[in-house]
Length: 301
Image: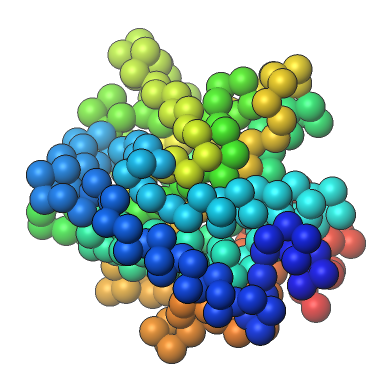
């Protein structure tokens, strides 16, 4: 992994990891995070409660631009070598972005890293698309998955590592007020209609679908109940693949983190823990990525 990452500006602890941590710490202390300001933070929190999601510009997220660019290059290189983009979790820069993102998510949603993390390199030229429409969690008791103040007990930060547009694939979401299943829950009985098909019977819901293009370093924060999907871009879009990474965060009392004793592991977990998490995530989501049997066997070793 060091041989793969070094030419791209990516590090594995013990090979520039400390320097990367110093760089990220310096960048994160620049004080440019607009969301830290009380009025803006309240606006973002209110929008999440109202719509189920909010879009943040790079100037608000203030992620380390060098880490974003290095991870973009890394995803392209990994996929060229036949590896899933989620193997970016082997590199320090992914974890440094998570450390940065965790402060945002705690402030906005009260949630901390659950380690439900994935990365994508979606190339429309190969007929690829993002995940099909879905909700991240389907709890039996939807109301209990929100706090008394309306804040979610699970939320995701989806971070664009490349340009993400309708032409090369971007996220689409349905605002809460146009989605009855957001609060009421979905009918999962065998004879029930698919939640998205049911939702799209309403003209107002179709017209309310929000395309969310983002530049590199921009992000989306959305709750576990927001209906969302990654679109299928144009094969001649001229923008190249859409590269992104997502960080799931939860209230530990509602859903425990995937890694035990996270406070002892962060910000830079041992390489073995990173590899185990990446492999477990890819196995868990294998139907959405459509891996070969050979890749699944390799991930299960």
